[in-house]
Every structure is written in C-alpha cells, then in structure tokens.
Amino acid sequence: MAETAVKPDGLEEFRARIKSDPGLVLDDKDVMRVLVSASERGMGENIVDLRGLAMERLEARLDRLEETHRAVIAAAYENLSGTNQIHRAILRMLDPDQFEDFLRNLGSDVAEILRVDAIKLVLESPAAAPDPALERISKVLCVVEPGFIDSYMSAGRAQPSGRQVILRQSIPQTDQLYGPRSAELRSEACMRLDLGAQRMGGLLVMASDNPHMFKPGQGTDLLAFFAGIFERSMRRWLA
View 1: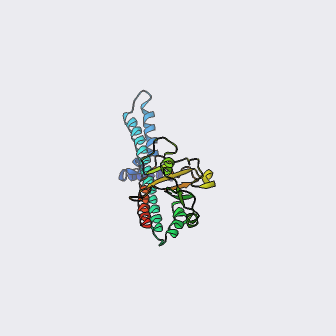
View 2: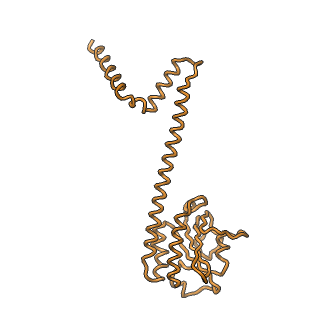
View 3: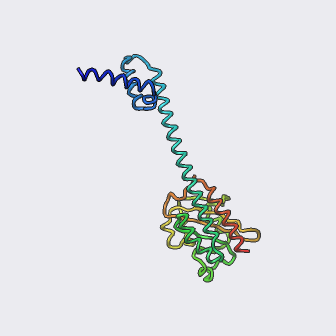
C-alpha cells in the first residue's frame, strides 16, 4: 500500500519538474530521439511524420554546424599559435649585434623556435666558388652562382616561379644546400628575398623531416611576414 502511494507522488513531481523546465527534455537529443521514435511507432507504418523528418534534418544540420564550429575554433587556435611562434622567432632574430652572431642564431635558436630541422640563407654571387672565410662564419650561409635561386624554386621546371613563398613536400635532388642531410628532409619552405637595388637575389629556406610541416595549400602570410622582416635585417647588415 505504501509503495503504490509513493509512485503517483514521484510521477507528479517529475511531471511538475518537466513542465517548469521543458529544456530538460528538449535539449537532450537522445531523449527526444526516443520520444519521436515512440510517437512514430504509435502512429503506424503508413503514416508519414513530417515533424519527425524535419527534426532529423535539423539534427543533421546542427551536427554539421557543430563540426564546422569546432573546425573554425581549431583553425583560429592554430593560427594564433603560429602567429605567436613567428613573433618569438623574429624577436630572437633581431637580438644579435654582429652578423656572425645573427647567422649563428638563425641556425640555432630561431630554427628551434620555428621547429624546423634546417635553415639556409642562399645568396647569389658571380664568384660562387667555395669561400673558406664564409664557411667559417656560419653553416647557414650558402653562396651560389647566378640563376640558382630561380632554378631551385621552380624545381627544374622551365618557367621560373614568381611567387615569394613556395611550400612543398619534396626537396630538390641536390646536396648544394643541405649536404648529406638532404636525404632526411621531407618538406620545405622557400622564401625569395629582395635585398635591395644593385644586389643579387637571395633566398631563405627552411626544411623539416616532417613531410606535413610544409605543404601546398597551407597559408603563407606568416612566412611572408617573417621573410619581410628578414629582408630588412639583411639590408641593414649588407649596408
């Protein structure tokens, strides 16, 4: 007797709670799905429930919107993280007071901040023979013959690329830049440098053993910004 007296009270309490806050049911997709399924079964197989179909479509649309929302947030976070990374690398790049320290810092601290395995500064010169004095300054600096930069950025294609930044998942088959490490590297960013009037071209390259570090289709705005700051620094050193 006592048990049968308790159930109606609990049911009334539950109903009162739902009436006072319908969101308890309406905001729960699993509960709503069960209720709609039960309603459809009660109407029979020959009845088309337009409300049920509409709800299914709205649920599918909501799922797509939530997925898009998560993707946008992830992309925004990744972009912010990349911006902070580039800013830290630029600040560290501007610290040295001597050109030798600038190059050494580029191949160590700056490379570590950017999480790349190799950085090379490529300068074209009519006299591109190996220079022991330059080699002593830094392993980052590489002096090449005129025309090398266009050929390297175009990866052997007949038409040189006019883009300032190129991202690719293959390293040209040459040991001229990375030496024996070329076989280990899987992706590369090439940034063409404008070093000013009356000066030959320059190139800044970053390489990684991660094949997904740099790949076509990625944004290049941050790398173009980094290259612009680097250009200004190089003009100051060359002056």
